[in-house]
Structure formats: structure tokens, C-alpha cells
Amino acid sequence: MITEEEIYALMQEVEEELQREEALLAEEAIAVERQQMDAEMTLKADIADYEMIEIPPTPATTTMASESRGFKRSEEDSVPCPVCRSAYLFRTAVGVILCPNTVAAATSDSGIKNGGTMTGFSRPSLACNLRLDVASEGLALSHLREQLRSAYEEHGRGGCPGTLVFLCAEQFGVTTLSASCTTCRASAVII
Image (tube, rainbow, N blue to C red; front, side, top):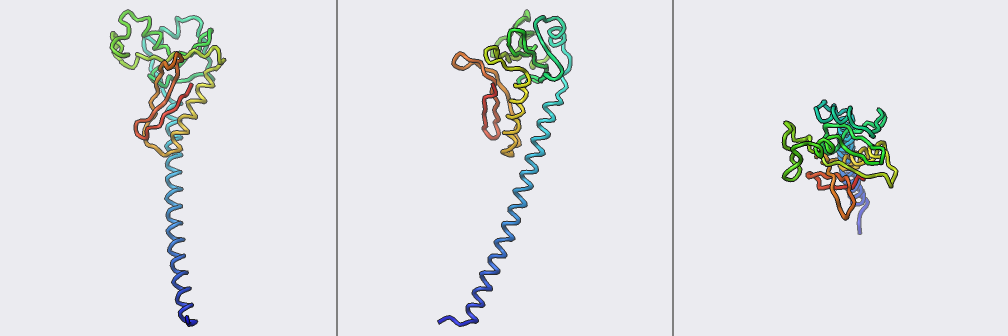
């Protein structure tokens, strides 16, 4: 038979163990909250960095922006190219979203050689392949901007310190813009 003192001692042990577990859970909750705050701060910084990309004027982007006809661009639709990050995207009158560096590369005398590296330009980032035919979907630049924002937010929620890399590629006869991260191995189709 168990005496009253033994029951009291047993209850005291259980209570002390519960207090230790509560303290550990509280520490874990604080650590998780800190990680979430850090991830949110990183996400906000990534989005702010993307939105604040200052694109230096280059002969290709200046020429294309000023001489091309059929391009429509307004300030609310200004979207930095996620692939080359050195120009603003345009939506043509026929419903194609493209980077001026794609057009500059295609019309350059030197052209694109060896897997997309541009010759004849001092900056290899001018070789860009972002060209999305969105006429049938009726998508605007604002939709692409929101898709990019969602990709950054989704990636940031996981707390990954890596950077998203964007690629425009043809798959099954359809050109898609996708994002990937080599750090966490995440990938997503943007459009």
C-alpha cells in the first residue's frame, strides 16, 4: 500500500517535471517565433530589394525603350526582369511580355552564342531570354508582378536564406517562367 507521504512525493515529482516541460516548451516557442520573425524580415528585405532594383541605362535598354514601337509601359506596370535583373519588362501590343535585352540580343549583329552568352557586349547579363506570349491568357505585367511577389513570399515562408533564380524555358511547346533555389531546392512555375 502507498502511504500519503509517498503520494505527495510522487505528485511533487510530477509537478516539477511538468514545470520543466513547460519551461522547455516556452523556450521552443520563443525560438520558433524568432525564426518566423527572421524569415519575415528576410522576406520583406527580398521583396524590397526586388522592388527597388535600379536598372542602369545601357545602350541596349535605352535604344530599345526609346526606338521600339508597339511597347506599352506605365509606371504602375514597371516590373524589373527577374532573369537578367538589368531592364524593365514590356508588354507588346500583341500580348508578349519580354525583356528589352531579349530583343537587343536577337537584333544584335553578334547574336547569342554558346548557350546564351552574349558576345559583343561588355556585360554578359544583357543576354536575356525572357519572352512570354500571354496574349491568349490576357495577362498583364501587373499579374506577373504579383506572381513574382507570391514566389518570393512562398520561398520566404520556409525561412530559406537562399536566393531565387529565374529561368525562362520552353517545355512541351510552351514557354514558362520558373523560379528555383539551390539552397532549399524549391522550384515553382511563375507563368
